[in-house]
Image (spheres, rainbow, N blue to C red):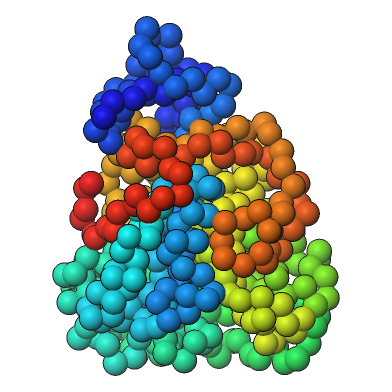
Length: 434
């Protein structure tokens, strides 16, 4: 199959220029001049982006499919310009903590996915011997918690267990991705409807302490580590220092930490609850600066939905702590990035190229000859108002309801084929070059 797509704003690595992108058999064959005389899909003034890569998605199937599922999550991904996602090892049942559980999850996902899907494994107390078989079976790395995960079947690691896991992942040269909050700094929020009480229960010091410990251990073992959903700007200097010293450490943040402000969260509005929490406006400013200077490597969703009954309790102590934003990540980040003077090349680097590099997904997240033809037609000037009922994820719950955003995904192509919501995505394994 061969197609060509023409746009005056093709987002290439480091530049935006008019071009015609020729696709042959699912790969980008060539970047041609804009006015080359070949039949082409004309994107007019819309931008052409590489498909986004979201390495932090909780699909929850099997076991908690009433929260989300592969069919709904991947349709939301495609609608938001995400063409590759990696599924977290929890909150599904069983959690992906051994090779048998990975096979259960792969069977559950089979024939359902509208985009390409890979899987993380889990590191929990007692499964150290299961990490190498999981690695051999194609997971992209291992996730652990240093504080309560919210589900009993995925307990956190203590310091001794974390050290042992890092020794093993270092031996395997596998990536360990870490929910980095120190358990001794986190307390219960109680039955309060006040966001300030929840915010106080998970202070910035919880992230700072955990990241400081993680960086030191990773350096000692020569292990690769990645800090998940960084919320606290207080930890940025620790990450920056660790990188400069040669530690193999990277970090991500999420749209909600970049665009939402703790001061604006109404009492009882538990759609805003996530862990770690949304902090203040000055904190968000520091996160943006850290994206600009490379201290933070990428922006991913941490899409973590639940049923309305679990999410909309009005009590920050009992509501599920997660935000469903898989479909909205691109316009959320672009709206704020443009206001702050960033370019589409920056957004593509943070949301496509860097996550692909983090997970070792070759040929994804960029538009260049030889790359996989995952492409997004994006109108960077159009605006829309978020209507949760119009989103493709399973439940119409969103802290962004009624928010006006800039940037509309007009079309997504997966391996050169227009995505229509049908299950044409592939299940991926580490090292897969398809």
